[in-house]
Length: 245
Image 1 (tube, rainbow, N blue to C red):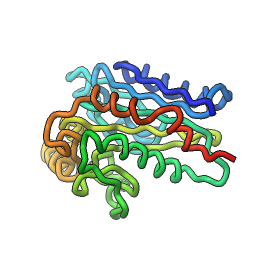
Image 2 (cartoon, rainbow, N blue to C red):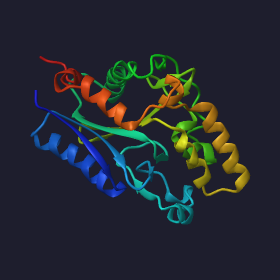
Image 3 (cartoon, rainbow, N blue to C red):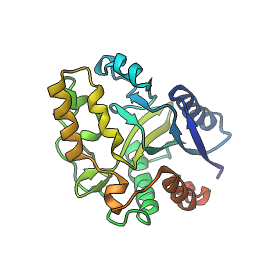
Image 4 (cartoon, one colour):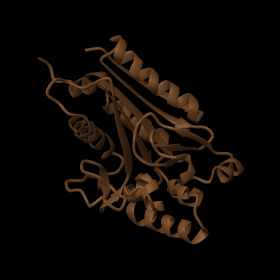
Protein backbone atom coordinates (compact mmCIF):
# COMPACT_ATOMS: atom_id res chain seq x y z
CA UNK A 1 0.00 0.00 0.00
CA UNK A 2 1.55 3.29 -1.12
CA UNK A 3 0.43 6.09 1.19
CA UNK A 4 1.77 9.63 0.86
CA UNK A 5 1.54 11.84 3.97
CA UNK A 6 2.68 15.47 4.05
CA UNK A 7 2.38 18.25 6.62
CA UNK A 8 2.77 21.54 4.81
CA UNK A 9 3.02 25.13 5.99
CA UNK A 10 0.71 28.03 5.14
CA UNK A 11 -0.08 28.81 1.50
CA UNK A 12 -2.49 31.05 -0.38
CA UNK A 13 -6.00 29.77 -1.08
CA UNK A 14 -5.35 29.09 -4.75
CA UNK A 15 -2.05 27.34 -4.01
CA UNK A 16 -3.70 25.10 -1.42
CA UNK A 17 -6.48 24.12 -3.81
CA UNK A 18 -3.94 23.29 -6.54
CA UNK A 19 -2.05 21.09 -4.09
CA UNK A 20 -5.26 19.29 -3.11
CA UNK A 21 -6.20 18.62 -6.74
CA UNK A 22 -2.69 17.23 -7.20
CA UNK A 23 -3.54 14.62 -4.54
CA UNK A 24 -6.41 13.47 -6.75
CA UNK A 25 -4.10 13.27 -9.76
CA UNK A 26 -1.57 11.21 -7.82
CA UNK A 27 -4.28 8.68 -6.97
CA UNK A 28 -5.73 8.75 -10.49
CA UNK A 29 -2.31 8.06 -12.02
CA UNK A 30 -1.66 5.24 -9.56
CA UNK A 31 1.51 6.73 -8.10
CA UNK A 32 -0.10 6.52 -4.64
CA UNK A 33 -3.09 4.67 -3.20
CA UNK A 34 -3.87 7.26 -0.52
CA UNK A 35 -2.70 10.87 -0.35
CA UNK A 36 -3.08 12.95 2.81
CA UNK A 37 -1.87 16.43 3.71
CA UNK A 38 -2.39 19.05 6.41
CA UNK A 39 -1.83 22.78 5.96
CA UNK A 40 -2.77 26.35 6.88
CA UNK A 41 -3.65 29.49 4.93
CA UNK A 42 -1.94 32.82 4.39
CA UNK A 43 -3.65 35.18 4.20
CA UNK A 44 -6.85 33.97 5.87
CA UNK A 45 -9.21 32.63 3.25
CA UNK A 46 -12.91 32.10 2.67
CA UNK A 47 -13.47 28.85 0.79
CA UNK A 48 -16.78 28.18 -0.93
CA UNK A 49 -18.22 24.80 -1.89
CA UNK A 50 -17.67 23.88 -5.52
CA UNK A 51 -21.27 24.72 -6.50
CA UNK A 52 -21.76 27.62 -4.09
CA UNK A 53 -22.21 31.07 -5.58
CA UNK A 54 -19.68 33.73 -4.62
CA UNK A 55 -22.63 36.11 -4.35
CA UNK A 56 -23.24 34.66 -0.87
CA UNK A 57 -20.16 36.55 0.35
CA UNK A 58 -19.39 40.28 0.49
CA UNK A 59 -16.31 40.13 -1.72
CA UNK A 60 -15.49 43.82 -1.21
CA UNK A 61 -15.30 43.30 2.54
CA UNK A 62 -13.02 40.30 2.02
CA UNK A 63 -10.71 42.50 -0.05
CA UNK A 64 -10.80 45.24 2.61
CA UNK A 65 -9.77 42.75 5.29
CA UNK A 66 -7.10 41.17 3.12
CA UNK A 67 -8.74 37.74 2.88
CA UNK A 68 -8.46 35.34 -0.05
CA UNK A 69 -11.62 33.84 -1.55
CA UNK A 70 -11.52 30.51 -3.42
CA UNK A 71 -13.84 27.72 -4.51
CA UNK A 72 -12.98 24.30 -3.12
CA UNK A 73 -13.18 21.28 -5.41
CA UNK A 74 -15.31 19.65 -2.67
CA UNK A 75 -18.92 20.40 -1.79
CA UNK A 76 -20.33 21.91 1.36
CA UNK A 77 -20.71 25.53 2.37
CA UNK A 78 -18.50 28.52 3.15
CA UNK A 79 -15.70 28.40 5.72
CA UNK A 80 -13.36 31.15 6.92
CA UNK A 81 -9.98 29.44 7.30
CA UNK A 82 -8.20 31.33 10.06
CA UNK A 83 -7.03 29.84 13.38
CA UNK A 84 -7.24 26.21 12.31
CA UNK A 85 -5.50 23.26 10.67
CA UNK A 86 -6.94 21.97 7.42
CA UNK A 87 -6.61 18.44 6.06
CA UNK A 88 -7.13 16.96 2.61
CA UNK A 89 -7.53 13.25 1.88
CA UNK A 90 -7.71 11.51 -1.49
CA UNK A 91 -8.20 7.81 -2.27
CA UNK A 92 -10.04 5.62 -4.75
CA UNK A 93 -13.28 4.29 -3.31
CA UNK A 94 -12.69 0.67 -2.30
CA UNK A 95 -14.89 -1.95 -3.93
CA UNK A 96 -18.12 -2.40 -1.99
CA UNK A 97 -17.66 0.87 -0.08
CA UNK A 98 -19.48 4.17 -0.32
CA UNK A 99 -18.06 7.69 0.11
CA UNK A 100 -19.90 7.90 3.44
CA UNK A 101 -17.94 4.84 4.63
CA UNK A 102 -14.69 6.75 4.02
CA UNK A 103 -16.16 9.79 5.78
CA UNK A 104 -17.11 7.75 8.85
CA UNK A 105 -13.90 5.75 9.06
CA UNK A 106 -11.61 8.74 8.63
CA UNK A 107 -13.52 10.78 11.21
CA UNK A 108 -13.12 7.90 13.65
CA UNK A 109 -9.35 8.01 13.01
CA UNK A 110 -9.38 11.78 13.40
CA UNK A 111 -11.28 11.54 16.68
CA UNK A 112 -8.85 9.04 18.16
CA UNK A 113 -5.96 11.29 17.08
CA UNK A 114 -7.35 14.43 18.71
CA UNK A 115 -8.68 13.13 22.05
CA UNK A 116 -5.18 13.40 23.52
CA UNK A 117 -5.53 17.18 23.06
CA UNK A 118 -9.26 17.44 23.78
CA UNK A 119 -10.53 14.43 25.79
CA UNK A 120 -14.20 15.49 25.68
CA UNK A 121 -14.31 15.49 21.88
CA UNK A 122 -17.01 13.13 20.61
CA UNK A 123 -18.29 11.61 17.37
CA UNK A 124 -21.90 12.44 16.53
CA UNK A 125 -24.25 9.47 16.35
CA UNK A 126 -27.44 11.12 15.11
CA UNK A 127 -28.12 13.81 12.54
CA UNK A 128 -30.33 16.81 13.06
CA UNK A 129 -32.69 17.96 10.34
CA UNK A 130 -30.56 19.80 7.79
CA UNK A 131 -33.54 20.89 5.71
CA UNK A 132 -33.23 24.53 6.73
CA UNK A 133 -29.44 24.52 6.86
CA UNK A 134 -29.05 23.34 3.29
CA UNK A 135 -31.87 25.41 1.84
CA UNK A 136 -30.80 27.30 -1.26
CA UNK A 137 -31.87 30.60 0.31
CA UNK A 138 -31.11 32.13 3.69
CA UNK A 139 -27.76 33.04 5.26
CA UNK A 140 -27.50 29.96 7.50
CA UNK A 141 -27.64 27.80 4.39
CA UNK A 142 -24.40 29.43 3.25
CA UNK A 143 -22.13 28.61 6.21
CA UNK A 144 -20.60 25.29 7.19
CA UNK A 145 -20.52 25.61 10.97
CA UNK A 146 -24.24 26.25 11.57
CA UNK A 147 -25.21 22.54 11.70
CA UNK A 148 -23.65 19.08 11.84
CA UNK A 149 -24.12 15.74 10.12
CA UNK A 150 -23.59 12.12 11.26
CA UNK A 151 -20.06 11.02 12.18
CA UNK A 152 -18.78 14.55 12.72
CA UNK A 153 -16.64 15.65 15.66
CA UNK A 154 -18.58 17.51 18.34
CA UNK A 155 -18.40 18.94 21.83
CA UNK A 156 -21.73 19.04 23.66
CA UNK A 157 -23.48 18.91 20.29
CA UNK A 158 -21.40 21.76 18.84
CA UNK A 159 -19.38 21.15 15.67
CA UNK A 160 -15.58 21.28 16.00
CA UNK A 161 -14.47 19.92 12.60
CA UNK A 162 -16.22 20.80 9.36
CA UNK A 163 -15.67 18.36 6.48
CA UNK A 164 -16.80 18.16 2.87
CA UNK A 165 -16.45 15.51 0.15
CA UNK A 166 -16.55 15.14 -3.59
CA UNK A 167 -16.11 12.05 -5.75
CA UNK A 168 -14.14 12.57 -8.97
CA UNK A 169 -13.88 9.57 -11.31
CA UNK A 170 -14.24 7.15 -8.41
CA UNK A 171 -11.75 9.04 -6.24
CA UNK A 172 -12.87 10.59 -2.96
CA UNK A 173 -11.45 14.01 -2.12
CA UNK A 174 -12.28 15.07 1.42
CA UNK A 175 -11.47 18.39 3.09
CA UNK A 176 -11.75 19.21 6.75
CA UNK A 177 -11.35 22.35 8.87
CA UNK A 178 -10.12 21.59 12.42
CA UNK A 179 -10.96 24.73 14.38
CA UNK A 180 -8.59 25.87 17.12
CA UNK A 181 -9.92 29.36 17.95
CA UNK A 182 -13.06 31.48 17.47
CA UNK A 183 -11.96 33.37 14.38
CA UNK A 184 -14.10 31.16 12.11
CA UNK A 185 -17.14 32.98 13.52
CA UNK A 186 -16.11 36.09 11.59
CA UNK A 187 -17.49 34.44 8.47
CA UNK A 188 -20.92 35.65 9.56
CA UNK A 189 -19.65 39.23 9.22
CA UNK A 190 -18.72 38.55 5.60
CA UNK A 191 -22.13 37.45 4.35
CA UNK A 192 -23.80 39.46 1.62
CA UNK A 193 -26.56 40.51 4.03
CA UNK A 194 -27.56 43.37 6.28
CA UNK A 195 -25.96 43.86 9.70
CA UNK A 196 -28.87 42.32 11.61
CA UNK A 197 -28.66 39.10 9.60
CA UNK A 198 -24.89 39.01 10.01
CA UNK A 199 -25.19 39.39 13.78
CA UNK A 200 -27.81 36.63 13.98
CA UNK A 201 -25.62 34.34 11.89
CA UNK A 202 -22.59 34.91 14.13
CA UNK A 203 -24.76 34.23 17.20
CA UNK A 204 -26.07 31.01 15.66
CA UNK A 205 -22.58 29.84 14.72
CA UNK A 206 -21.45 30.55 18.28
CA UNK A 207 -24.20 28.22 19.57
CA UNK A 208 -23.66 25.46 16.98
CA UNK A 209 -19.86 25.35 16.74
CA UNK A 210 -16.94 25.03 19.15
CA UNK A 211 -13.16 25.00 19.02
CA UNK A 212 -10.51 22.61 20.28
CA UNK A 213 -9.55 25.36 22.73
CA UNK A 214 -13.14 25.30 24.08
CA UNK A 215 -13.01 21.52 24.43
CA UNK A 216 -9.60 21.41 26.11
CA UNK A 217 -10.18 24.39 28.39
CA UNK A 218 -6.85 25.92 27.36
CA UNK A 219 -5.30 27.21 24.14
CA UNK A 220 -4.74 24.60 21.42
CA UNK A 221 -2.67 25.76 18.45
CA UNK A 222 -2.68 24.51 14.85
CA UNK A 223 0.90 23.32 15.31
CA UNK A 224 -0.19 21.13 18.24
CA UNK A 225 -2.95 19.66 16.07
CA UNK A 226 -0.46 19.00 13.28
CA UNK A 227 1.85 17.20 15.71
CA UNK A 228 -1.03 15.05 17.02
CA UNK A 229 -2.06 14.05 13.51
CA UNK A 230 1.53 13.42 12.47
CA UNK A 231 1.96 11.06 15.43
CA UNK A 232 -1.31 9.18 14.93
CA UNK A 233 -2.27 9.30 11.25
CA UNK A 234 0.71 7.33 10.03
CA UNK A 235 1.00 5.72 6.61
CA UNK A 236 0.25 2.34 8.17
CA UNK A 237 -2.91 3.57 9.88
CA UNK A 238 -4.22 5.49 6.87
CA UNK A 239 -3.79 2.36 4.77
CA UNK A 240 -6.66 0.90 6.82
CA UNK A 241 -9.06 3.11 4.84
CA UNK A 242 -8.64 0.63 1.97
CA UNK A 243 -9.59 -2.93 3.00
CA UNK A 244 -7.02 -5.54 2.04
CA UNK A 245 -8.14 -8.43 -0.18
